[in-house]
Image (tube, rainbow, N blue to C red; front, top):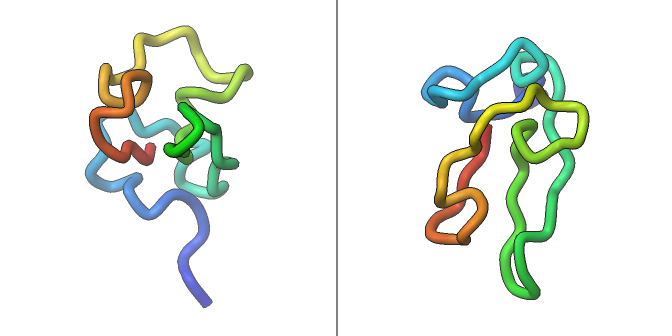
Length: 62
């Protein structure tokens, strides 16, 4: 079985407790890009996500 939670939790500077136990759902950034990051969830704390998460500059997982 794969580990629970986000696979990037140990190396993400924005990791939260929820990242350790629960994989986030995919969020569509554009017609061609998706990301899976708890920072983009409406229930997430109000923090500024990395620019690449909102511009589609790279794949961001948190």
